[in-house]
Length: 476
Image (cartoon, rainbow, N blue to C red; front, side, top):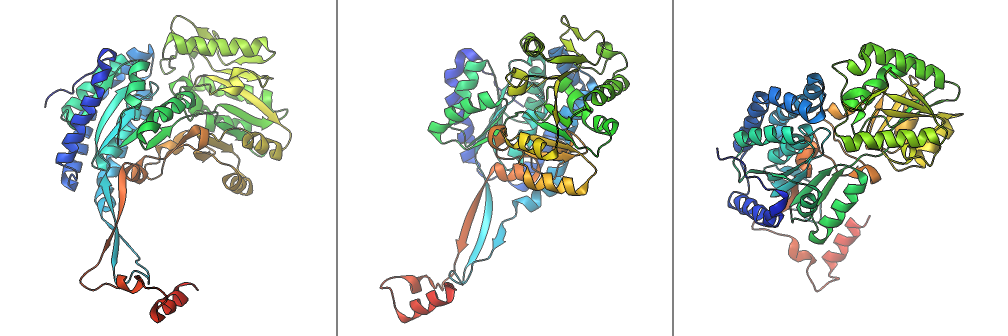
């Protein structure tokens, strides 16, 4: 197959032409069959499996240090599982749904048909560049669309492998790959896509939404925010730490759904610190030298974390490192830093952390803890550590979050048969599984009548006896 054509930040003005070419290809074949969609998904799966080792190696190069297992479990495996799930259910998703016509429209047949939207734009972040490019692409392809992917400039080695992978699976009038800096990203987000999916920070999400607004481009925004982990008084501290630590350790905490801060009963801070240190050493017995412990993606992100840590410490926070040495500036490796007494004005308490820093916020009552969560922007994830069914039910009922996990962290994202998406400041819209198919489809209502129709019964002149009778029957 012809290699996917590349664009750089220097020729960003050709982007509309590239989009037009994809739209013309879509218009020439606007409704791919079930077999065609399955073939494309199988081609993508085969290419992904063939490139899994090069992808792991490229991710390690981009990060400086990243465990192959981290890349397999968080980047590659979810894509394979999502393809398998979609292949099994795609036939049912594509079937028109019969709907009830009702007395007013009888006799008539009402159906909902799911059409491809056309060309989907996908803006990919650097933290999971495989999963967050191919994951949305799987949903877009399953729904019958074509796609343009804007890859992150911070993962050049991974991007090169993704280009090879996608060129093996698709022609360049099916999937087009774009690379470039923030200026090109701005131009990309202003294109007149039939749908645009952006994954990244809340601040940049606002810019993307503003750029898409003049074109009225439909959006799915997968943002982040500060995802809390609430440890209830009934939960054993060692068990709470065991269930949440992986969500903060994978990819060195550079995850949009990582626990961002911990709410715990006042007086239990030291117990949490000891339990966290002990469990961290079981996971990473060599500390920063453990081969499974990842690095921060680049110098800019590493310095941001150090600056925020320094700001909090200078403001009076106490820092409790989970390893010695606590940091290696040359390799951008940072052990988990637990923080107590962090003033509310510090960046760590205001912004999404996206790294191995974890503030502890004590509470005196559960009501106080819930009020703390409710007073802040709605998070992408909410974690509850409690064995109390009544408290679990209360949090499900009373709190808002994009998703929730009880006595677990992170794994809610891996549920193939459930939607993933934020709410408010943490995003809008959903994808994954069936919700991904729906997001990238137009649900078109079709009313069908034959030779006989009752439509003329409601035509003027009004207030005839049968119209009055009909209104009497309907307005009950």
